[in-house]
Length: 434
Ligand code: H79
Image (tube, rainbow, N blue to C red):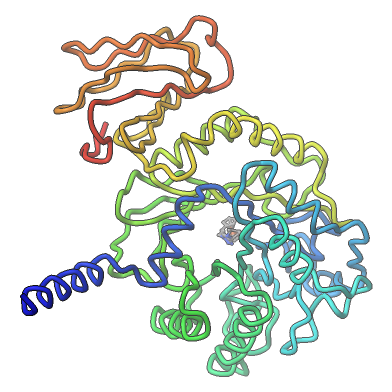
């Protein structure tokens, strides 16, 4: 009897161990269930309205660019207002460029004078955001560029001139990075770190692994994107081997990632064209952004949608309005986005699907058509269908697949979601590649 009990106990312990998640897995699962976050690109460059990533030494001469901080005084910056804008948009985390490729630091770092405390504004932007995020229940994430063209120890000093500086010293530069990263983690307790700019020759996968191990040693539960290593989906949305990746999730840029049930990913897009604010930049339509959001969730990924606040500290009113419209859509359709999984169908121009429990959420992107025909789901039956607002929808399963008749009243309207009720758990269905 005693031995039996011991065996049962050991079995239970063993099973618990099998299902125990590492701190990293726990964080990544929470992160991926959030689905939607706000990217913020900001710094003194907004005084010129040119791009933060590559206008230094081009549209703005290097010396001018590097002096802009002396005029940076965002008197109307209100962290609570930014965070509220994100929250009202249905976003669940916020990722801010603490230091972009131009090297300027939005926090009063001890390790370079090129930071916010030496601007006329003086106050710590990150601290204000940390406090506001905590208050409003939004996760604070920190973007930190691997490359720093402004730093004397980083060997390249311009996006437009790749000449290697013989006086630079990568060992000292990596020590500087570690000091800053420790400062960021200890002082602002970020949920996640978003690295970028690792593609230049001075950076290696091995340095990426060193930094990854280092940040995990300070905060074991922290996660990072995969731009610590050389392999990432990037603009071309390349497929990559997870074993070769440094970091916890992949980062397609200005492209929706592929449907992938095992590799976590997050696509970054901008609400306008530039990452940093630009006067009269083209604002993307609500339709375009919602389609990106649905296709992203449908691919089992996250969307990091960027806004570039102005030099006075405010987010443009027209952008705030667009974000509010997205939030309004999510108030009705959020159940089809948050805490769901992508698939089973790969997204098309006409639809995307997400799933949870016995439901497939069919995101109708093309509302002009009378019906959508989905390939058959072998082994599963659709037993009911309705819109998110409860209007019943007719579904016919025939030889050519599952035909979903779209309600006439919604023809030509903004994208919406039809819930397909199945006779089984939708997660047991294999992915349907189209
Ligand atoms: O932070 C955002 C961008 O600033 C950053 N990644 C996102 C999240 C990024 N920096 N560089 N890139 C992305 C790659 C950009 C390459 C190009 Fe170009 C920009 C090709 C053409 C314009 C740089 C400038 C290379 C040639 C000219």
